[in-house]
Image (cartoon, rainbow, N blue to C red; front, side, top):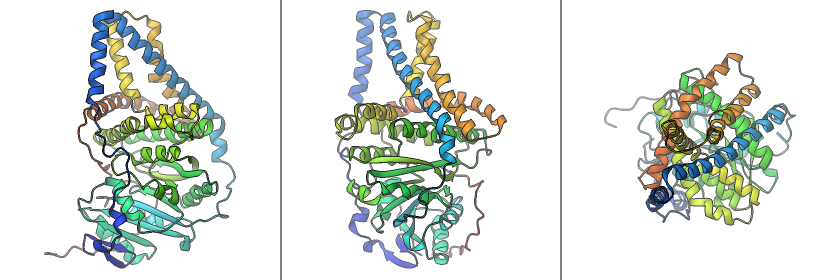
Length: 482
């Protein structure tokens, strides 16, 4: 197969045969608006300087500390509420009887985007082919997004052996990142539900049935499943991310579902109604967090997102601080951009109540909280040197945010996940990880406000751990001079 051509099964299609809509970017109401807000950032600095000149530095820092206390207090209560909800009901829901797994099987298209994923692509394809779903109702589409390693040839070998698998090759430089790859695949299939996995994901065989059963409710536009880290023993960083995901999926997202019915579409191990997706113009190629972007557009279109913690998918955690930085910087940069782009239309949306708007805003601000925590630490240091006349009690909510609130979520995640007791020591890894997150989110915020260019960057994989037994097809070596 020559790169720059597309393959559906074993029948080749050249790029010229792909429908024009397949390569058209999804509509983005903010595409023409500059990303940066340098004047807003400048106004913060000028406002603080003027306040300090007219009211004194101590009083100004006191007001800033008071505002931080309110913010931290709100997030502490939110953390605690999610932890209580998960501790009370999550385990029961995990053990609930399987309902509606076979009574409704709409047509499903599974999409996976791959760029230089030779280390994990065989495990991913093996897991996709093992999905328990009627073959005549399922289409599997894997996009080779201009890879320059053996990803494309491995996928072609799989497609030659497995007629259920369709492979689409995008030429190098096609653009749009993950969103661009998914949009190209979107216009080549016709199904009722689209399900997305990442290249390092290995879904449980029942994941599709568990995700799609929620779409019998016409108000549901998207559904998210639960992602579990499969390589938590590979490194200290992977171990920290393992506990982080237990907290995020078993506590945080479960709490948002239980208390507000406002979970997020997570971008992988997720399903979206095809008519909803097409009506919204597909995935947004102008953002690096297409999942958060789609979550907001689904909500503002009057539909809802659901969370199914029994729809399990196994993914690979980053194994080094450098990879953690790149991944979380992308998440922070995209999340913060979504807040800047959508908070105004979110407040005007007729489809959300006031409480739902507040919770969605708190969700959008989660990648600002570590930045504010860093500011709070600066105030603490200044107070230690006698700058900023703040009473000790004013700093207590900061301590609650940094330790008690997130610690409650992490601890409940460990309990519900039934991990071994000695895993509690993994909580110590969150001290350096949170310190790193403060720097990451601060850097992302400043870069975003200054409008510094940034494009989608893939997460590097190791491929060291898999949950499936892989029997990859033989890949023919590249011919010299081809």
